[in-house]
Amino acid sequence: MIYMPFYKLFNAALKNVLLLLVPVVLLSHDSLAQAVKQDVVIGNHKAMYDKNGMLLPWTSLQNAVELEMQWYLHCPVTHGYPNFVWMTFMDGNYQPDIKRNDFIPATQNGMGIISYLKYYVYDKRRNKKVLDWAKYMGDYLVQESNTPDEGKYPHFTRSTGIAGKFPQPPDCGTQGDKPYEIQPDKGAIAGCALVLLYKETNDKKYFVQALHNANVLVANMRKGDSTKSPWPFRTDYRTGEGRGQVSGDMVYILKLFDLLSGSGNTQIDSAGKQLWLWITNYQLPDLSKGGTLWDQFFEDHDEANDRTAWAPLNLARYLLEKKEKLDTAWQQHTHDLIEFVNKNFTSIHQGIPVCGEQDHDKDPWGGILSTYGAVLAMYTKATGSDEYKSLAWQALNFSLYALNTDGCPCERAGFGPCRGGWQEDAHTDKIHNYIDALNAMQ
Image 1 (spheres, one colour):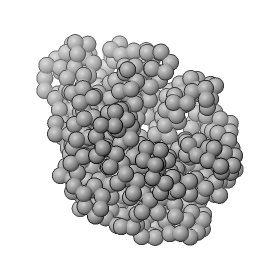
Image 2: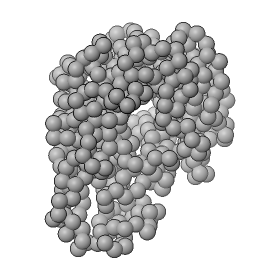
Image 3: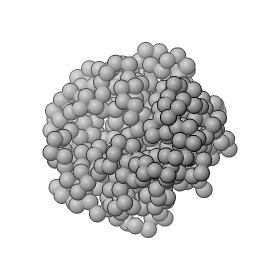
Image 4: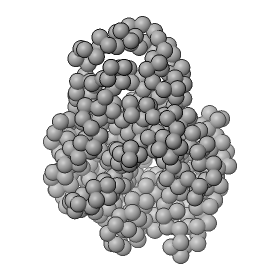
């Protein structure tokens, strides 16, 4: 083992990332070649490399998606829903982890609906069970996971809860939430997913809940500035008392308002314009000032000064999807967002550049690592630039090593063999990223 500039094996973008990580103990060309011949294991598989030492996938991305989706489509249905819909910690036999009953219904099922709908369309709508599973997740959000019909955030989708509760009780807040707290941006994630599910199924109950979440958000919107976002990170749904002045994920609230724009609710249109002005006037410029307006996203954290990679990457994704329709400077802003993530959240695991979640957890969990790879792949296609191409595919290839041969995923790669775990990272916030990456390859 020696110190050397490993970026010689990658592209110019990786050089910039690794210069931030030096000194890092990395393999020389000769020792890398030797390692390739040995039984190097990443996650659940022996690592495969090309002649230059670049990590290869143990199976194709396409096949990995098919394996994982088939494993989940065999998930038992109990209590009226597939098991993964009503728990966050599920093992490799579809059973709950007896040590963890905390649960993140909005993000887990919201991103799950988005994942299943993207896969359903990608697969040319051939397997109706995929849509059925998306509807199960939508039904859970509509029927089981709302606050009581009272207070400042009535009948609003819960950010956290308790596994196996139907419906969730009024004081079900877990993880970093207090018993009566919700996270406004998580209601927007659920709302976005429900609008998309309505468009696919024409079932109005999904639209009604999405529109309600949006109207509640509009009613509780405040004036954002250089120290606070238009909604706090957490709030007591009864009183509206906020906790955490900054919520970094404003893009899903923006997406929800955009999806509902033209629905006849002029308040939503106005709120969307105000939110976009805050993002452009405060949040995007803050990238070069330390990134304090990108604090907080993950339900299980409430530390101060906890910036995340999830929020900037998902705004970058939205800009790549909308381009000039939303932002005439989309390419520069997307580049700025990616560079912010590269500077603050990337590291080297087993010789591969990966992305971590947040300041307080930089491990390559499945959700964030697949998000990183997908957004960089989308940037490559949208701009025609190869600046991030190698980074994208190395991150995605690394993430695939978490998948078992039978299709059961692990919540993260690179930490030894495992099955199951945190379902957002293992599955629901991952499949849509793989579909975006596959589309970017076309």
